[in-house]
Amino acid sequence: MKPTDLRGILQYIPRFREKIFIISVDGAVVTDENFGNILLDIAVLRSLNIRVVLAHGAAAQVKLLGSEQNVVPSDLDGSGVTDAETLKLALTAANRLSHEILEGLSANDLRAAVTNAIIAHPLGILQGVDHLFTGKVERVDVELLQTLLGQGIVPVIPPLGFDGDGKTYRVNSDNVAVAVADALKATKLIFITTVDGLIYQGQLIRQMLVADLIGLLGRPGFSPEMVSKARQAAAACHAGVPRVHIINGRVDEGLLAEVFSNEGIGTLIYANEYQQVRAAKKKDIRSIQMLTKGSVEAAELMRRTRGMIEKQLGDYYIFEIDRNPVACVALHTYPEFGKGELACLYVSQAHENQGIGKKLVQFVENKAREMGLQELITLSTQAFSYFQSKAGFAEATPDDLPPARREKYEQSGRKSKVLVKKLVR
Image 1 (cartoon, rainbow, N blue to C red):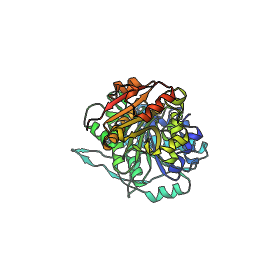
Image 2: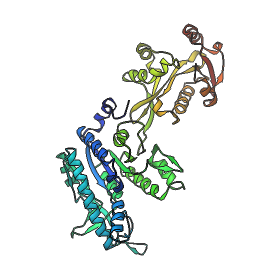
Image 3: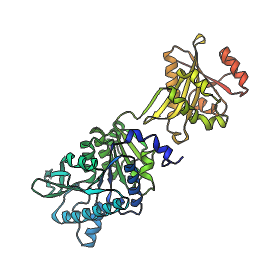
Image 4: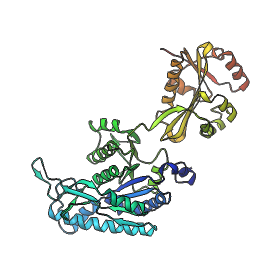
């Protein structure tokens, strides 16, 4: 199922309705041919009553304008020194981009308004260097933005800040997005850029707790561009934004795929625990059956009816990602024999190779130890090599099964391999 299918979207609507998403778009993305699709995705978000604020950068346009006018910009993205000539370039570039965005939003029947919601003051002199017309966000006009959002209007925020004397300053668009997300208590902050996400030592980070990201920032492995986005993501999480996404704006339907699917397309940095194992509830029975359906049909797992699962529901556990079940496992116990059975272990295909199976095996082992069991058994027709090589199980025989389980084993006719692991306390 495509993440943009209605059925995939429906499960998220109750959580996101009337919530605020801040979308920060790099200038290079605004002029990309796929930007029209991003605006269409934003129209979908608005149709679901998600409130959207759109901030944009202008670095690519400042560079291009400087080349056309034979002016060398003193800074491109509003984080360095902005001299008078560069401020002129930034004003022209930002105004043009804001107008293009308004045109695009209008083409999708969306009401929008460019705002002066960023109140800024001069960044000042840092380490002896006067940053001239570079500004720092002092505060966000929350009342203005809330008024627009309440009327169904998409606020468009250029990378410019204004002070009480009417002066304009060049501000970094990512800093603006973080400040706005903090001020509006946004549910999500989404950075749309020209790369696939945060790349660390050549590998795309798919999901990471903010504390782990901060740990990586102290080591080599990020490019300078990546360091900036990583720091902004960390700052947003620390400010209270639960989820920060970094995605490639050149991917068709990328925004919807990131928002309305567990796996996403880019990087997700989260402020609190994003994954958890919890006891299954009655409402999860259908999810367990749907998760394992393909594996049952392939004869990898034993077929379990709703009644069978409900009868032993207390034995089942769900692995959730952002409150969506993506894996399951069961622990059936035979306390009189000091044994437990790890059963019904399954991870959805979209989440394979992320260590989830290993986490669930470890979870069951810990549960079994807590119960005072000395041995964990599992039966497998096709995954026995995984249990032996990755989970420390050894091949055993049907004689190692408790009598009641041995009887079911014989009746099934599956001739599964029996594996066992001694639990050291």
